[in-house]
Structures are given as C-alpha cells and as structure tokens.
Image (cartoon, rainbow, N blue to C red):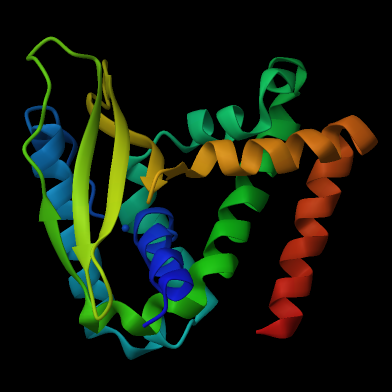
Length: 212
C-alpha cells in the first residue's frame, strides 16, 4: 500500500473523517490516551463490519462521523484554527456553514481510503503529561502493509456539562491537519472573503461528489 493512500486512511479514521461513541459520564474520567485507544479501535471495528463504509458510501460515512467522531471532537475549534484570525469576524451563520463544508470536504477527500481498514492496527504510545494538564498530545503508530505511520492527536480538557477530552487537531507523519488547510483557506479569504471561501468549499465538495 502506498504512503499517500495510507496517510489518507489515517486522517479519515480521525475526521470521518475521521472515528467514535459518546459516553459523557464515562468520558469525564477517561484518560486521553485511553480515549484515543478506545475510539480508534471502535472506529476500525465499525469500518471492518460495514461493507458500505469501505466502499465509500458518503451517507453512511457522515452518519458514522456524526455519531462517533463529532461528540469527541472540538470541531468548532478545529475549523476556527484552519480559518485563522478572520474567524473572529465571522458571523454565527458563516461559522456554521464553514464547519459543515469543512466536515464534508474531509469526508469526501478521504473516504476512498476506507477500503484499507482491514489491514490496520494501532499502538498508543506512553502518554507524557501531568495530571493537571489541560492540553496534551497523544502519540500513536498505525501499521499496515507498508512502514509504520506516526499519527498524533492534540486534545483539550473541557469543563462543564460535556466535560472530558476533545480532539481538535491531528498530525500525520509530522504534518498537522489544521495548519495544512490554514494556508489554503487564507489564500481564498484574501482573494474572495469568507463567503468566497464558503463558496469555494461548496464547489469543491460538489466537484468531489461528481467524481465519486
């Protein structure tokens, strides 16, 4: 299996793509590395058990993301970080549209790699963090046919009713996902504004849909 395909799959498992059951009461006490280990295993099991997911059925993939990934992610923070400083001037409706289009972009971009899920195994490395840390990095290693691939997760500890650890960025082989999209989004915002970025994402998603 080639590295590009392998990397696309890994990102999908987290964001779409990405990944995850929501157990609010349990999540409050669950350590971040334990959370990642459980969620990754459950995502892989879900994909392996559902042929429609492995063939790229977008409806099924989005349902998987909404049910399992989104409750365990701070996707608003992820989208805001990708948009950059302009996010502070973005309206509530624009924020909603950006999050929707960004999620679909990630799902469509990486859906084709789900067919490789049966070949993957995950190892979570020892966590280097103190008990009072509010943000941590959980480092993992994914193995398939090719060389092992490093996959790291940034998580934040959230208070309140939905207390627990939430994923807000990930790193595949030294490249952070949010930073990768930030430069692309900045170019579009500088040229056409926030509405132009939303329109560009929407068109890209439609284009990917026609190709699938």
